[in-house]
Every structure is written in C-alpha cells, then in structure tokens.
Amino acid sequence: MSLTDENRSVLLMLVDLINSGRNDQELLADAGAIEEFARRHDFSAPISATSTDVELTHAVREDFETVFDSDAIEDVVAAVNSTLLRCNALPQLVRHDGWDWHLHGTAQTAPLPDRFAIDIAFALIDLIREHELSRLQVCAAEDCNAVFVDFSRNRSKRFCDTGNCANRTHVAAYRKRQEEQPA
Image 1 (tube, one colour):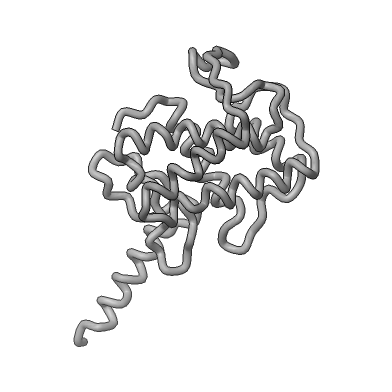
Image 2: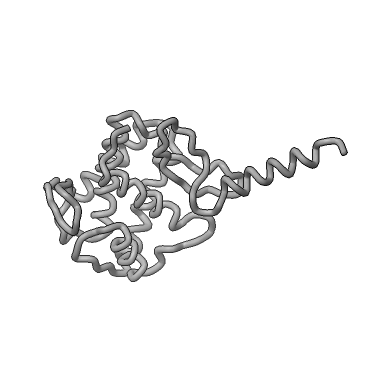
C-alpha cells in the first residue's frame, strides 16, 4: 500500500474521530473539543466551531463508522459519494503549515465538520481504488470496540492502540493456559 503522508494522517484522524465516541465516552462534546481536534490533526485556519458543528461532527462520525463495520465496498462508496455531494466538494491543490502540495476538497472557510468529512472521503477513495479497505479494523479484544488502521506490511495488526488491548489479551491467554496445565 502506497499511501501518502497526508492520507495516513487523515486515516489516523478518522480513527481518532470514530474512537472519540466509542467505549461509553464522548470526547467531542463541545465546540472547544472540536477545535482542539482540528488543531491536533493539523487543520489550517480558520479553526472555529459552534454547537451546531458539534452535532454535525457527530453525524460525520456516524456516517463513517460504517466503513469499519461493513463488508460491502458499495456501502463505503455510498458514504463517500454522499459526502462529496453533501459537502459540495471542490478539490483544490494547496500548500500550507509545513505540508507540501496536497488536495483540499472544499474551501478553507467551510465548516469544520465538512472539512473533516471531505478529507476522510478523499482518503477512503484511495483505499477503495487500491483495494485496501480491509486495513480498516475493529480491535480484536473482547472488551474493546475501538478502531484502527493496519499500516503493517503483512496486515497482521489485530489490536488498537487505545487501551493496551494486545498486552491485556495476551496476558489473559497466558494465564488461562497456565490454569489449564496440570500441577
């Protein structure tokens, strides 16, 4: 998989967005959290959010949660196409804030949720075209539903990075094996 640094960054933003509402938590509960989310993921100015943007960001999150849960590529394509239409995608090449030339899908003055959605849609387009949607995964730990992107060469990643899930699962399996062995 030959993803650009921009696409990797956007896919990590997608993971962060989805995980912000999983495991009985809401990390994007107000406009300040949305603005901080945008800054953390290197969105260029203007960065300002309203209470309406909070609701719209939650809707974007819900729209794109399906890409981790769906086995049908058509579902992901439908989410991408509806996003491009809804947000009035108007691709432009830009360079800013230490990023070399890259594609913005909407004007800098568009609301943050639209900018999030368009960037995600563009990154998903590349995954679809490269037949790499299987890299979008849900954590294999029984007690976790966080998501992640498997950037490994051999597609072997099974656990998220949010809750030490791999270590907890392996320790639990080891302890179970130890209990099953005769004394």
